[in-house]
Amino acid sequence: MQVCLVSIHPRLLSGQINSLVGLAHALRAHGHQVRLVTAFAEARLLDPDRVYGPEAHAGLLPAKMARVFRIIKRLHHAAAGADVVHLNLPTPAFSFVGDLVQQVLNRPIVVGFEAHLLAGADYCHLPIRQAPTFYLPWLTMNNPLLARLSPFSAARYVVASQLQAEELRSLGAPTDRIAIIPNLIDRQRVAAEAEADLDGVEWPHDGPVLSYIGHFNHVKGVDVLIRAFPRVLQAYPTARLLIAWSGLGPATPIAQAIAASGAGERIQVLGRVPVGAVLRRSSAFVLPYRLTIGQAAYPGLVLEALASGVPLVTSDLPLLRELGEPGEVAELARPEDPEDLARTIVRLLADPSHQAAMVARQRALVRNSFDPDSLVRRYEEVYGQQSLVATYA
Image (cartoon, rainbow, N blue to C red; front, side):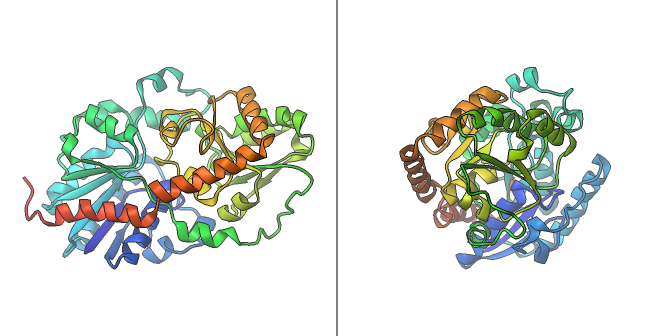
């Protein structure tokens, strides 16, 4: 089968791009021909070291929209001869792009969405004053009002979670066109990184090591983890916190939070690192999201942690709750609550048998629900249904 995978995402370092690369690798391993249409050269996209290279600048909204139309123009030629075109979009607020591509190509299109929209409760608690440049675009571009303008005319919609499927139904997408297939991660990169050296990093050996990897955007809650860490030190005075920054998001608020914590000597901020190598060495991996807007569904780092088998602490949010009850494959702490986050971390560190059981359940979950071969077969079912359709009305 010839599959054309398309993304309009403006940044090379993103959950959607990682998922796209994981799907491309898995499809090719099953013998399919895959064409990639993105804002980036395919060689750069498939480079295992892409997450450590220079980051593409997303630009302002007009530049982003111009990029979208350039990608659609390229897609018109790249899709020639393809059995199926799978277009990946940020959220259902961008469904109009799928409708447009459907009309331009005059063939069935499978549309996927990286993330979910703002829920009603999110509007009430959105911390716009703390990070207006991050949250205001979500208010203006990624909201249900804009999504409802779409006729949802694409042939099929593929989402990763039940939360997203319910969201699409509420927006008017036909239930019989929605498929739920968890997003793939780039397992080849994670496996290769697990044995990588952490050059220039002196790994602590005198106590438990907590780690965070990712952006410094406000929604990630890195400052919440920093505020929780002194309470962890009360129980584990030799604990260390390693924070690996992707290079995205403002660094100043994080530096200020570290200075205010009084625990700066036990906190180390790194640059981009091999994710698998850090996960393998960590006593616990912490992802303290405030919200899951702006994250891939499911967040790629959550899936990479599960695949790596590391005790995981994240936030008690609807999307993450789908993965299991608190304590099963991850401990879930209340969002934006440093005291509860600290208690959750301490409780996990104090129980080695629970950590071992958690890791065993993580591996079982990955094997049963996130196995690449099984997921590709489900994609093949969706793609096969569409390849039999000569025209779409």
